[in-house]
Image 1 (tube, one colour):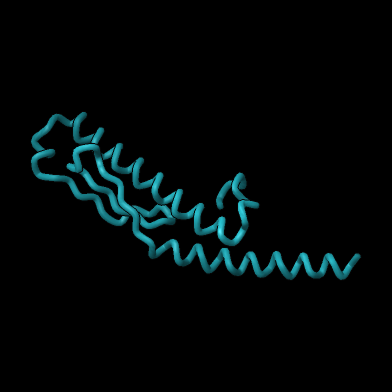
Image 2: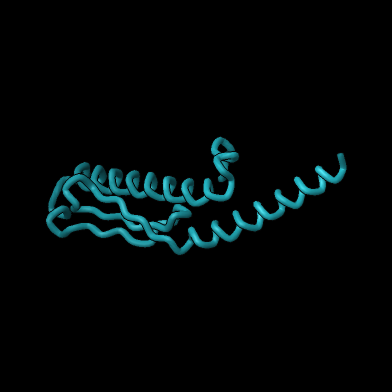
Length: 104
C-alpha cells in the first residue's frame, strides 16, 4: 500500500516539474487577436501578458466608442487564444486532470 503511495507522489512531483517548465515556455509564446476589420491588433504571451497593441491610423479618426470596441474585441480574442494555447500545453502533461482547477 505504501509503495503505491510512494509511486503516486513520485508521479505527482514529475507532473509538477513538467508543468513549471511549460508555464515558463508559455511566457515566450506569442498569440494575437484582432478586431473584425484588423484595425486593432493585440499581441500577448500565452501566459496572458499584453506585449503590444497596434491601432491603424484610420481607426484613430473614429469616434471613441468605435476605438474602444475595436480594442475590446482584439483583447478578448487574444485572451481566448492565450487560454486555448495554455490549456493545450498543460493538457499534454495532465491529461485533462486539471481542466477545472483555477489557475491552471
